[in-house]
Length: 205
Image (tube, rainbow, N blue to C red; front, top):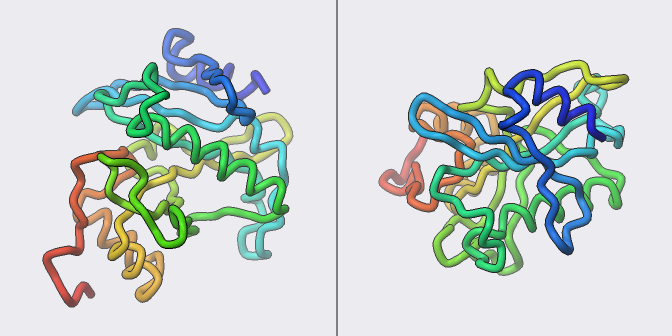
C-alpha cells in the first residue's frame, strides 16, 4: 500500500505526504498538503481501493481501479475530528470505500450519494446533502490518471452538492451539470461558504 504514498512523495515531496491514521477508521488514508495559487489545501485520499477491480461497464474498461479523495480548504481542522463539522469527510471516505468493496459495485464520474433518507446536511456548517464523484477539476494537473504497479489508476474527487444541484444533474445529465458547474467556478475544494450555483434561476439550461 505504500506505493501510492511513494508515488506522491516523488511528485510533491516527502514533507507533503503522510499516512493519516484515525482511531475507528479502517480504510487506510493519506494526507497530502498542496500549495495552490490561491491558497493551500489538504487532500485526504483512500490508500488501497485500487486493489479492488471494479466491475465497470464495457465502455469504461481500463478504469477499474480508483482512489477517492476530498480536497479541504486551509481553514479545515483535521486535528478536531471530534467535531462533526470537521470529521464528516473522513467518515464518508470510509463509508464509500467500504460500500464499494463489500457491495462488489463500481463508481465513476457522475455517481451521486444522498446523506440520509430524508436527506440532511452533512453538518451544521456544510449545508449540501448529496455527494457527487468527478474527475479532478482544480487539481486536474496534480492527480492525472497514472500507471501504478499492475494497475491503471484513476482519482475521483468527492464533491458536496445541494439538493437542487442534485435534481438538475438527475434531470439534465452529468455532462450538462458538470459544464454548468465548472462555468460557475465549481470545483472539488470543499467549501462551507459555497452557494448553490443554480439557486437564482428557475430554468437552468
